[in-house]
Length: 449
Image (cartoon, rainbow, N blue to C red):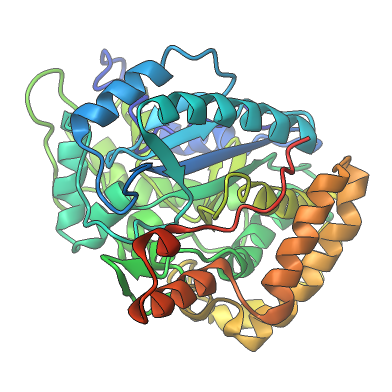
């Protein structure tokens, strides 16, 4: 079942260092990973992690001064929220829901927290923006701590994409129970496979990051392009053949170690050291080192007991995050919709060319062109229709159903995604549109109740 939605990999919620305990062997690591990363049972819980860029209300395109942001976050930390509030390295805000027993419980809880957060930010002259990538400003780190210094040094070895990911990106991450141990539409093996194939359609349908520094990057989802360009051993999926537990355990052991934590001073950033090699060294890791290593792996679907789907861009509007949450939950947790999803995306899997997501041709096409790709468009039409049929069975309200229908009509049916609105606004601005108009977002109806 979904146990915790808090995402400590980039946030300020992980302690800098913990007391060392007894070392773990290679075999123990494999057993631990297999035991803790896929916890099976009936799909009962749902969660969501919503990341936001924080902007000035008066001039949204200008960066927020660090002192102003720090004061705002200090005020936010006094709020009695149900969600975990964390801060990303670039100052992005994240709310991670508590595990919810239903879709509407999840929506209601996070929406109430967001109302409180927005009210507090307004008093500081700040607001939240739902872009997958900052459309205006270059990456700038807000948090300066040993782990982020080490992360930046590590990621810089592969190129500039890591800094942009750390400081300029935001997403909607849906968390689902791993599923039954047994085969079938709701079995964990099927759900693991489906998440990686359906993920490409979710990338395309919800792409919302076509700009960087005010210019078109050539991608509908620049955020997804960053993940594909980063260290593949850290950001790509393991092979989807065979037992998911065994495949993930191998990936954990063979992934590079990002950093070696230290109680004082800068953290060491080894070069070319895998976790497997570390277990075989004269100074092997302990359980706390393994736990931290797991948080530094960024595949598009991360098993954390539950499945964390990480491929969806942050969405426009105050409540835009609800549509990908509702659609994804319906396609996984309703048995009929899950079977339709499986049949729909199975032909798309051939385009992956046996390469892992997000570095395969299917995912790259989804990130570059969104639903302008004909096959992805046709799949999305079928999948959104299946989700719409399933949502009443999950207890979705009329407002949620209307929001999904409105998104479908506005984007999916037309082979478009939210990124296309931004590109249209950018073109309009080149013909005299104002900065304020460029910042305008589709807000839609209140769909939270």
